[in-house]
Amino acid sequence: MSKELNITPLNKWGFTFSTPLVIAGPCSVESEEQVMETALQLKDKPVDILRGGIWKPRTRPNSFEGIGSQGLRWLKDAGNAINKPVATEVANVKHVYEALRMNIDILWIGARTTVNPFAVQEICDALQGVDIPVIVKNPINPDLELWIGAFERLNRAGITKLAALHRGFSTHEKTKYRNIPRWNIPIELKRRFPELPIICDPSHICGTREYLREVAQTALDIGFDGLHLESHINPDKALSDAKQQVTPEAFGELMSLLQKRESLEENPSAENQLEMLRGRIDHLDHYLLEMLSERMDVVREIAEYKRNNNLAIVQPSRWTEILEDRLVTGIRKNLSEKFIKELFHAMHKESIEHQTAVMMKYDDNSVEKEA
Ligand code: PEP
Ligand code: MN
Image 1 (cartoon, rainbow, N blue to C red):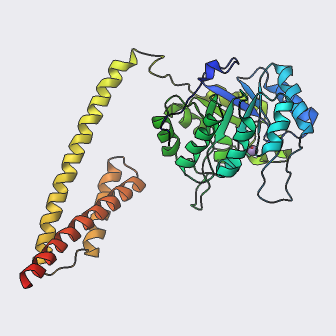
Image 2 (cartoon, rainbow, N blue to C red):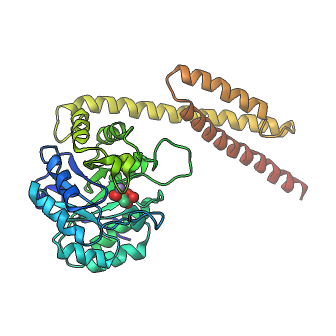
Image 3 (cartoon, rainbow, N blue to C red):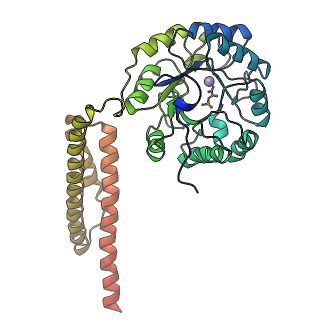
């Protein structure tokens, strides 16, 4: 498996993009007027690419499944009217051919397609040798390798104008999001492929308008390369994803409230200060590891004592006492309850493993002695 991706940076895609890159437009193209009017209202807003879904992957078949091929011309005309490239989702060979025939500028692969390597390969085969940018949404399940696999397949088809679109992950967990962001996954993607632009899609993460700003700001704070937001002239009447779409007006306001962050290349003077702070983090991390190692030394001593006195490893009352005490202290020190619980559960698990190992060592000896 190749470890590298061949990526053409956003500024060489052949369009004029701002930083961060912004994709906006309706979830679905519904009519010629709707997409044109949306585009015209977005014209004076910070938009680089006009989006619109033509074929909609819906959970249930009785929902609006997209206007179909006729909408491609409407989307393209709307893009031309505001002098912006247009993007649409392709999920099979027919979609690819139709989109290419209508000169759609940029394609994206949806979350329900990325999840299926057969479908992704089929799209790649249809795109072999075509120089068109492709944006890949994360698969609906939090599987980073599957996401990377789609980029590798596209690369093998000769496509290098690539970007990742983070739209969150399906989950059964109770959360305020429609699709839980699991930020560690796009961050790990960025760590492994620093050249690959990553765009965040707060609309599909949130599922409602309420948290769009907070999610978009988090993405910029982390250092994402762009944002993707669904905008519709009459969101409440939208035929798909009504709850999460915003008017072009509201989109403009949202964009103006966001705080842009600079990368170190853009602001080299920040480097020294940052280096100092990073030095402190490195120092604290090593200190933490030393403390943890010392804690495990004590744990092993306890295990020996328990073994000699025939005591069980887990003493539930002691464990409850530790957790309660550490929660009080941790919360007082501005750490979240969730974090303290996760941290102490992880330490407890590790501690039990160390203690079990100590007990087993003794058991082996006693077997030897008896033999
Ligand atoms: C969309 O962008 O409208 C869409 C269907 O998104 P996703 O593939 O992320 O569900
Ligand atoms: Mn949508």
